[in-house]
Length: 141
Image (tube, rainbow, N blue to C red; front, side, top):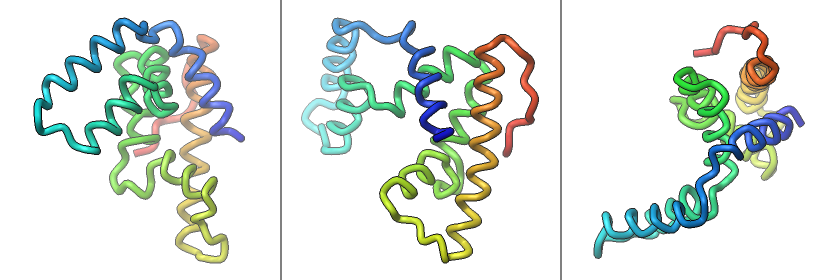
């Protein structure tokens, strides 16, 4: 539920910077032209999710950028670009939603618990920033 609240907050904040239809079309044409005849299925997936349809992941990143400016790298990394990848909040969220987490497995349970602590930090800092209040928790590494 906390992840859903974070999605709603960030998508709402990012709407101000949402690219217009014409801009998305221009970006799609540029992307396709840059690939030439080497366009792959991965390219088509990226074209659809990042440029044309603007996936929830892309819209949340835009919200983080709008909300935190230059500091957006911290929450974006925690949610989407963390190394190792299995500790990215997006991946933990997907595994929980798609029932890929076995609650009896201590390793998976620990992953979900630590992810919950990180999600709390990202969500609280995002809410505080949106309200114009100082951040209270340090970004996890």
